Image 1 (cartoon, rainbow over the protein chains, first blue to last red):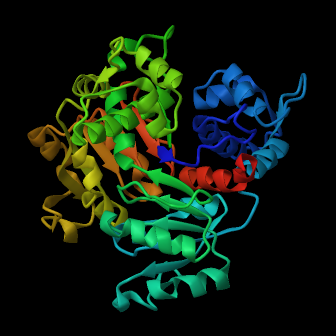
Image 2: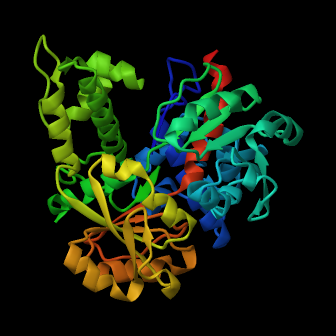
Length: 223
Length: 223
């Protein structure tokens, strides 16, 4: 779940794209890739929706924000729709990313296979602790935070993932922006203040647990 | 972001509560707590919405799924609405939770302050590696996975957080259910198959990065 200043409209203020729609695009893309691997070339909105627990109307409405993708009597062509969604999400681009902080969370993220699977390439890690400088973690070099700007420019890093304690997060975020990064994924449990042009997505893991407690508490109503 | 089989209606199939609404309840609750700490007792839907980047209509519509909370000419009473939301989310209950797997991710989660802040109490960790048995991490004891059922019953653990590699996740999930847990938060990048009565929320961190790339790619349209 995401709290962010990134929930901006694609089509201008008159036709904003809700953040939930963007999240669902990610799910559609994963499901389509799975379907394609199983050798299917096309899928209907009903089939795609039912695989994810959504209605066909929801699928069509979500995609309609971005264009016309279905073919009458055929449905969606998987390869074509995957490519379109990747273009919408920007994941057809190269996104060299850096992880800031190599404590347990930073190390977990460096070992996380899910990023590269979606085209995000972790190219560097940074830490303020000099004893970590030069260390390799899962094949990624840890640099000292003072080398942030140099390495960011050299590697063309665009997104930074903040995995430092909350007390250090704002200062780190400012340094990421100064180094030229355009987006920040923030795991620290604080709200960041950054210039308008910089996008921030905050990850609050307790929200996922609250979704779970809600689901458990309310399951009786589906019996 | 969450892919789950937990997105079940509160009010039955005719009046389902979208998962995005549940996520927003979490945000409202955090913001209201913040406002309350600043000494304010009431807030309008317009003010609450604008703090989070939502319209007042969105706030009212979200809350209307669960009842009537506002007062004409006053707005929402913070303390009352916080209590109502906690009841809806189930976070007014005690949720002893366990973390399974004490690699980097498990350790990061054991040190994560955000869970306890929202009332989730981590009471135990488990790992299949016997060298970890009995170790204390951030004050939490690591048990061997073979003691799962005993400890779960003794501590009344209801939710399990899966922080093991994908290859082990399904087997671990089945053991959590056998031990009596009713909800699973899954960080492993695999889809779990569990009995109908068990709730699963899956955490896919790449989806957060995709939200970020979308926001960066589409920011030009807000200029």
